[in-house]
Image (cartoon, rainbow, N blue to C red; front, top):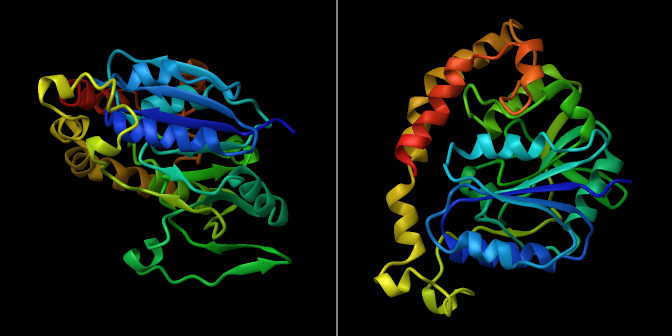
Length: 290
């Protein structure tokens, strides 16, 4: 079996990136790690370059941030056909050393599951999620129609239906779960045996980069810098109309589940692709988050 692809996109918050990539590389399972830095203005890229691990198959820096979906699809384009796909948000610290094996065990036990997500231990209570565990022998999952995309694993066969993340809406997890549940024979759910932490801010004293931090010398820190540049909330409001229109088309079966990508030019010819909508999304980040 080909080791799963693990996608990790960074953008500023060097302290968290260092903490969470270090935690990921301390895990014991085999995988192929693809790291894209989305034009960070702090010490993130220098840290990424310093990493030494044979599981790292790609580390690349984009000079311009065009948004998370743009970078994720750049990585996804490199996935091998039979390769499982795992993506981690940069604020996720994996606490389960054999997290890949945990994902594979549930995928093997439940072939109808196309996407599994891991969440922090307080997530169900925070979001008032009610779901009944489906168990078989020692494995199980909680079926649910929307899986937060911070730490997810997708079965390779699902991509025959999905193609890529949706660049026309950049709706990411909500979008991809709707496509899977409405337009494929697969289900989505939460995995209870993988534990993660999503700390959003750490002190400079606790930072792995404190001795090398260039921002400290300028009386700055990477989290304040991140907060100044973070525009995702504004972007989410802007794309609500796009997302609603897309889901309406999906429900009416005027679109298939397959989404094309600018990184795969043939796909934009063979499938419906709204170039203008995707361009607007990329330009929002170019203008507001660099």
